[in-house]
Image 1 (cartoon, rainbow, N blue to C red):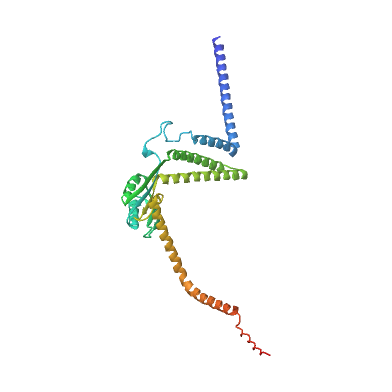
Image 2: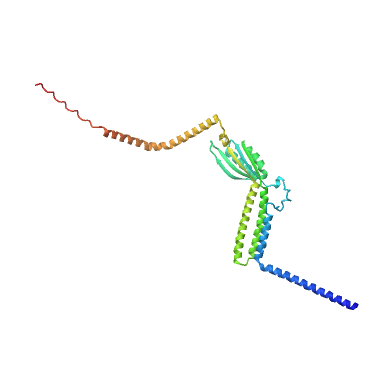
Length: 319
């Protein structure tokens, strides 16, 4: 009985081992067939997967998503040196030497690591004016403004700031998402097998690259505005009337403006008269002489001829 029992157990174990081997072979075959089916699908299946990956990437770049390196939600970095801020300033300074002070302002900005973006000057003594657009590093903005104020008598100063930290973070997330979409389109284009797929994928890739270039241009523009602040400096002479002064009201202000307008009008009238006088002398005098001669001639023609007086009849004698 013990020998038969032992043989039966051996046969049962062998059968179980054979069944397990067959089951493992079937699983591996089904896995191979699945991988072959996936490879047989080609770019169409990859396109579907790429679309899903694009949707996931777009979801990551949504406004509510958290961009990499921005910290946990609800705990933003509030340090000023970690924020993107655009500084802009406007100054009006009255000086005694407009050209000299303009050169001095350019030297200050150059020494601070900036440059001149625009330069417009009027050197007339009565209306000497200089308008400079200065670009200076954001870290030196306040110091440069204080130095420029010492050029003369400051009459107006306006400083504005704009925090664009959220816009910068949003642009970074959108650029990262768009780069992933461009890479996905390039991979699909490399595995395209038909002309239709090539044309479609090339068109899609061109659109994605154009969108990426637009986002990168916005990021460069924003980085330029945050790295270099803008100061609009206006230098005027001592006797120049500014727009702020022209808005004043009162009798004396009106009298002063009226006298100034009268002088300007007389100057303009004399200038026109001086320009026209040579022509009047050259053509007006001969024309006047000709007109006088014509009038005399007409008068002579219109006068009636002088006739002789009638003869006086002789007196009759009485019969």
